[in-house]
Image (cartoon, rainbow, N blue to C red; front, side, top):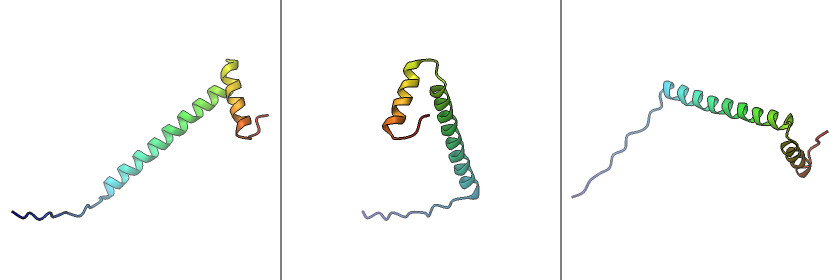
Length: 66
């Protein structure tokens, strides 16, 4: 028995594209917000351990810190 496989072309509707774009933008915004919270939390941390760890990373990556 020989079976032929037929594939139907995928049609992207404007609604699907809009949904995907909206999802991507939401993910990017959530990632940026989380990054800002982490940076703010470490930069102004009361704990010397967190602050010094961030400070040391800036020195290792040759970025100015002061």
